[in-house]
Length: 77
Image 1 (cartoon, rainbow, N blue to C red):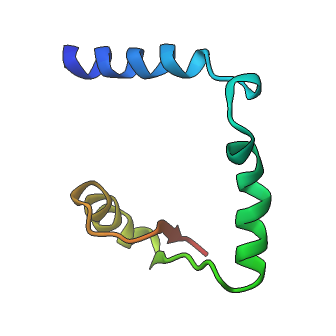
Image 2: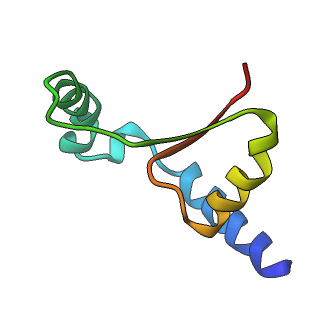
């Protein structure tokens, strides 16, 4: 689709001009703050884990349908 290509190109161009010199200090401090909150148990995250290669098609379909919460993983062990 031509529209999708244009959207992708716009995002690429915008991100190409981002650098640490133009970001506010609060943004640069965010990774260490988030790590501390995670370590203290004040920040949690959700994972949606499907098991087995046979679960992959449904997991990918759920991902595109917005049915997952947090990070989606397919465990193939």
